[in-house]
Each structure stands twice: as structure tokens, then as C-alpha cells.
Length: 132
Image (cartoon, rainbow, N blue to C red; front, side, top):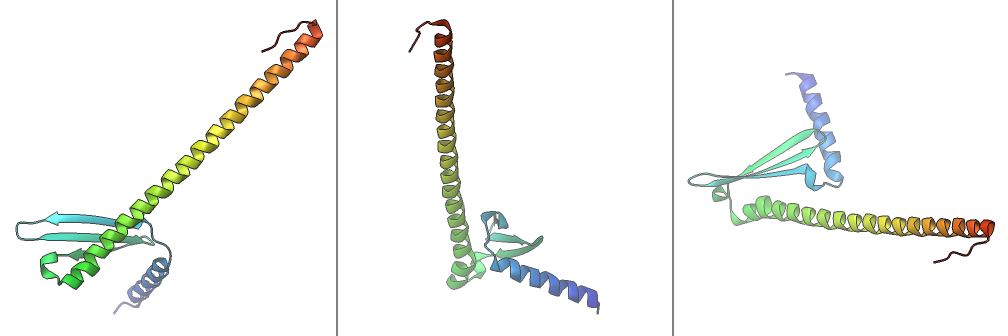
């Protein structure tokens, strides 16, 4: 019996428990679907704290409750996370673009104002009257 291995396992499990208490994102999950002649297998991989937990499911071996709990719910959860992430990214992009547009308009107005002020100063110095 190697005590260090047991201690490392306990530390890993403690870190995983802490990580699972935190918010998980879409990047923490990897989903795979493999089809065979007689069956298919879903694989869900959860990556937390540099550790991977891999779950394999073969639907033909599962009851409806197990299928719902282990496959449908995580898949729908993944789809929901992806959808929410997509909406958040679109919102941030829209905010960034509107901010860029406002800054661009503001800069254009500042440039035009500077140009008009310089033109007025030039007109005053040369006693000419050029306007827009």
C-alpha cells in the first residue's frame, strides 16, 4: 500500500469537489458519440483542475431513467450552456461595435471641430471668409 498515492488521490478528489462547486463552462465538457453495428456509445468528458473524468454510456444497456439522467440531461445542459454563451458573446460583440461606432463618431466630430477652428483662425489671420 503506497500512502503517497492515497494522499494524492485524496488531494485530487478534494480539488475536483472544489472545482465542481464553481461554475462550469462549455469548455469543461467534451462530448463524443460512437456508433457500432449493434449499439452506440456516448462519451462525456469533464475537465476540471487539470483532471479528466470520462463517462461512457451505452444506451441499449440503460433504463429510461438512466438514459435521461446520464445522457439527455448532460446533452441538454451542454446545449443550453452553448446557447447562453453564444448569446452572451453576441451581446458583448454588439456592445463593443456600438462603442467603436460611438468613439468613431466622436473622433470624427472632434476632427471636424478642430478643422473648423483652424479654418476660422486662418480666416481671421488672413481676413478671408471661407465657410461650409
